[in-house]
Length: 379
Image (cartoon, rainbow, N blue to C red):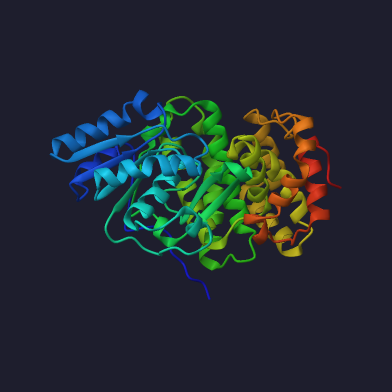
């Protein structure tokens, strides 16, 4: 049996749709954003003007970093509670939206702790506070998923907290916001979306619905991703923005795989970009997983869909976008890799790796991690 939920109450898509904020019901808007990007590109100023025009009260909480931590959540939560919002408006990348998800739920349920959420003791719905997500990057699909990835610094680990209550009520996909993305963010977020689509499609839990969505997302991303890197190409940017969200529909219902498990382990320890780690690891993970006949068949289907071997295509995308071929070349020092190896190995076996189509143990993961780190062939 599949228990499927693809998004909240409403999705609004298209260039300029940030303006839809002015039609959202509610009187007190708590805006959560990052450090500076949404201020520099004018998104926050426009959001403020829409709220002022409708006589809405609002407060801005900024400063969420690229890898939101327990500290970020616990710092912003008292401010949110003091403001007492009926709408939380998250404008920014996936990290901003993830932090907003956790803060909003903890604000509504006053006695709820982040440890309880981590342990699965968590409500499955919100009723008092509306959550609106406006992504500025095209990759995480945080605007439609039930997951919130939070870093636990004491453990050097990123953990995907999960509940249906995290799914935003309204998602606004305005491609104009993506025009200000730095090139490295476009690369990393775009390849994160590709990874979501492929890992969802090859997941053993995928069904007719999730497979169809993952296949469509993959095809659309491959078709538009290169063009979206042309400056000012709003049409391609909007397509990628939409297809990354479609990939989110699939992976939040089907699950992911060890590419994400590995990325969370290394990202939690070294703070390296999640999308970059995914992009580097994906060819190695697919080469390993295709030993499973069902995965090999799935990869063959995706290859036929794009008219090229999928692993070769992903390697070509990485080369085109300047993605290094190994974690070592991505800047992770060999001494740090060696000193932290035991915990990296242990953490890489957790999380999404538990749903990898090929069951992993420490011996097999050891081969995979060393191959990805040094950029060596697995076979």
